[in-house]
Image (cartoon, rainbow, N blue to C red):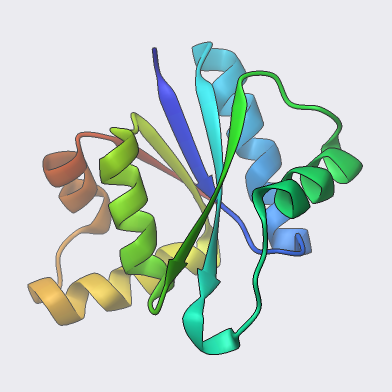
Length: 132
């Protein structure tokens, strides 16, 4: 089955809501399962639970079909997202426009300026959808 991963902030920002809505549309079109991912940064010292995330999403968008909620701890959001995408063997990653810029900066530091979409397709075998 197709898997769509969408990283979001908690609590949901207006950008996260827009990105999540787009991911829901993609998952619906593909008949895919959806993973709603939040990266809980160690340095912020705040703990978010899957239940917190699910309740916030459902309060905004209603109950989602074929959705799972994942919280990952990490120091760098982008690296943690890449690890989750690889672990989930995701087919599609839906990220916000701002997140796409962060991915580019991180990957440039690591891989000397790659094309982010091309890198993800080659290494993770997935499509990247960017939402404005």
